[in-house]
Amino acid sequence: MSVASVPFSFSRLSLIAGNTFLEAVRQKLFNFLLLLAVGLVASAQFFREFNFGSSELKFISDFGFGALIFFGSALTIATTAQLFFSEIENRTALTLLAKPLWRAEFVFGKFLGVFAVIGVFCALTIGLMMALLWHREGQLMDIRPEDFANGRLIAYGDLVVVGVLQWLKFGVLAAIVLLIASFSNTNLFTVVTGFFVLVICHLQYLARDAWGNVDNPLVGLVVRVLGFVFPNFQLFNLADQIGQGAGVSPIVALQVAGYAVAYIGVIGGLAVYSFRNREI
Amino acid sequence: MSPSVSAISIQGLTKDFSVTLRGVKLRAVDALNLEVAEGQVYGLLGPNGSGKSTTIKIILGLLDATVGDVRVFGVPANRVEARRNVGYLPEAPYFYRYLSGRELVKFYARVCGVSGATLKARVDEVIDWVGLSGAADRRVGTYSKGMLQRIGLAQALVHDPKLIVLDEPTAGVDPVGSAEMCELIRKLKHQGKTVLITSHLLAQIEDVCDRVAILDRGKLIVEGSVLELVGQRDRQALIVDPLPEADLEALRGWLAARGHTLNAVEQPRARLDQLFLSKVSRPGRPGGASAGVGSNEVPLDAKP
Ligand SMILES: Nc1ncnc2c1ncn2[C@@H]1O[C@H](COP(=O)(O)OP(=O)(O)OP(=O)(O)O)[C@@H](O)[C@H]1O
Ligand SMILES: [Mg+2]
Image (cartoon, rainbow over all chains, first blue to last red; front, side, top):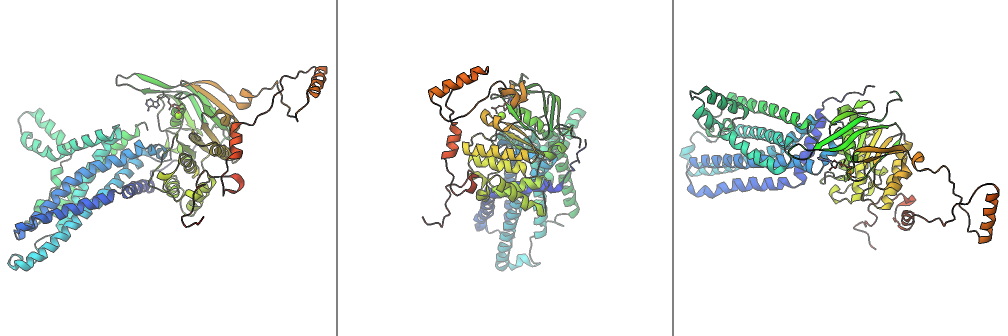
């Protein structure tokens, strides 16, 4: 007897993503995100007294991106692990996976749901930061018009581009956390390992710089393999280029985005592979 | 589809769990063979830890068999296609507490591919069917145990599966609720569905099941139709008005003259659950088909 096969379905995938997002909304995670974003950006205001003129704007932008990177990473790890394990620990995964549904749809659905949540956080933080910069820039333009002879200094378009790239980087991180969660038994283990991997991803370029050119071919190989296995999160830090020279090059931005998407695809695939064998 | 295909076919199923780091195995199911024919209500019984839930999870592809072949309507249980025709209510079910009952059933319906015009009708139909209409717009997080079992049954039925697997659907449910659950299972049977059910309430299983299997430590120890297993073919009961002693003697004589004996004279007693059912009222539920929900719910604007 043959039963019609069940094709991979993007609509089921987006149903799960939507439900994951809804969980974050209804469990009041967003109230927290909003508070965090407002708090972060508002705290940049404390430094107003420095009144460096246009360099004050640079400071606000650096501060904003620093906060986005730090809190965004923490939030990505915690949210991904939480939204995944709430499904396992409450045994709702049992009911869901007993439906005609591919485990790949489950894993990528979870991923997209988390990715959307982080997207909201990034949009909030960047949006608020841009509003603050715009406002402050307007004030400074009145106080010291000589600094702004050629109009506004801040490249707002570049801010958006860099924000999107950070969001993609958090996507890579979320995929890594899902991969860890797919075989881990506890939320805590997942979060701790996730932070560990985050640090490696941020610092691996140091290892490459220090040992990549050592004569010992074995060490060189190990370093290169590590640099390949762990994505280099330093690549995403284009914030320094904002407002300097030609600004953020669209080609570089696209390359970095492609780098992120490739890692998300591969790591997500590994997560599906590992989750397929998991006993629920 | 040929009628010879069983709804569930289990051959030589063994399931080991590794329970320690040193690889010590625990055998949860041991060389189990089981056939559930289409249209049957099949009871899977056994003490705690005898492997009932494990067997069910393997049927649903949630666990992989260590050894053995498990098929659902002829399709290997670990394939996604096998779950097309199956509805599942897990034991002690727990659902997304942030959704309302209706949203929950709708979510599962859409996951199962119910869509378009039929979606809303089907969702309303199953919610009504399990008697939860009154509470469908409340958050699942506020539901009582009995209501969780009901919403769980609704989500299991929403895509109109041919096989329904219920793991302890009456655990934690009051006698009224579990009698209603049995009634629903009977209705499913009349609709031609196959039902696999586990329960510790043997009286209920006996009332509702066609066949039962008893597991002990993962091994099948008894299997057969309920009638075969517990029917006493060599006995018959007559129920009469109270007889005076003299009449009873006369009856004994009458029977003895025909070569029969009167084995026992006893007063039939109503079972306690029947008494409970007749005494406990659920107001506002016409026809006695109470919902186990909202019976003491008062609209906020109602004046006493
Ligand atoms: N994931 C698991 N890992 C290790 N052992 C398990 C796992 N799941 C079940 N077991 C063991 O397998 C055995 C059978 O468990 P199972 O849940 O199937 O029993 P059951 O018949 O459903 O019992 P109950 O009536 O209590 O629900 C038990 O000894 C249990 O401890
Ligand atoms: Mg059980």
